[in-house]
Length: 412
Image 1 (cartoon, helix red, strand yellow):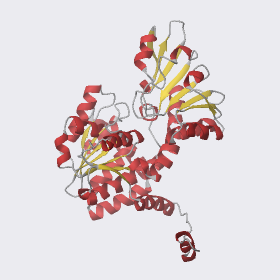
Image 2 (cartoon, rainbow, N blue to C red):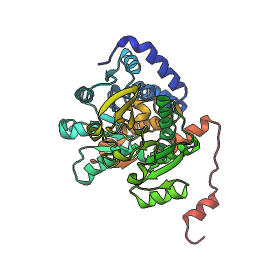
Image 3 (cartoon, rainbow, N blue to C red):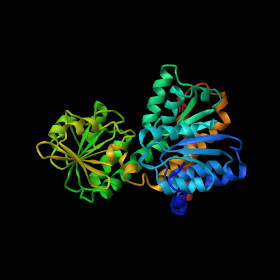
Image 4 (cartoon, one colour):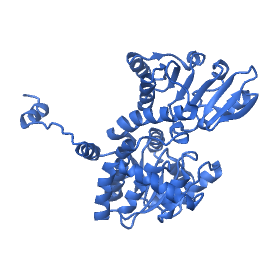
């Protein structure tokens, strides 16, 4: 189910460009094609359907898997990429801008062929399996989850004894959250914001809500672009960290009247809501870089507004009774993908290399696992980093036997 299969040539070009800049995944794909370790297995993927994701899907298919692909955000699907994969014979269920009912039906469609393994982004697959299709868990080997939000939701299920299958927390791997979440989000969020608005960042006051790995990246790049940065947090330790990195720290209530541009990166709901909307400046820009479109309460904003109108592609103006305009980017959805192309290819090379190797690991070992959330084996994390360093012709030191003894022994 794709919008228009005739869009495939454009999608093939995008995929080829991304793949050219993903050397680690290329190496894994070559091994997969030669060894066919996934032959006979069905894998369902719910990730943003764009060129880098296509490279992951094709890598798993090269390993012998039967792959079904759907999106994890209706505005991040690129129809030409979806068409390209469908033209190549993959099961693809996604259309850009799908309404909520269609979006969730596409997720069900991707699960309907009975996957042995799932790759989830945000936990939508997991939600459907646990609420509508629990029978799928009886034959599944397991899954992989690549987002902070998704891992958090799965741990809630696991802690309450309700998780039905084992899952690898790919997000928690060092090669994921240290690079994808920080540098990938940091760059792609600002690329999208600047493309959507065509406005200057330097000199503006930017409010970043949340100082996790993604928030750190967004704040770092805002500072580098010349913005004055305010961080809001609920964690006192992270707030102190932001303060010592040179950012101002305050509540969202205090920041609301100061910010020119707001980026929410928390994974929680109502980060900016009716408590704050009355204090926003005329022309304030708000956007979300968290997985779900719940961080900015658009229902409340619409209720407060006298008029709502599109003012530029990807930008909606909410006009208040007093004449102030609040500009929302990408409908409050994940701005770097709903309003841009997502993370750079080199970043997703590392993340999707982890996904591919995690899927392979789960295929080999997952049948022996009980339901739960598992860390990615450290050797997989290190293998991805070493592959990248080798490609870049960069070397690292090794411990001498004497150094190993020093580290491992109390008495030396």
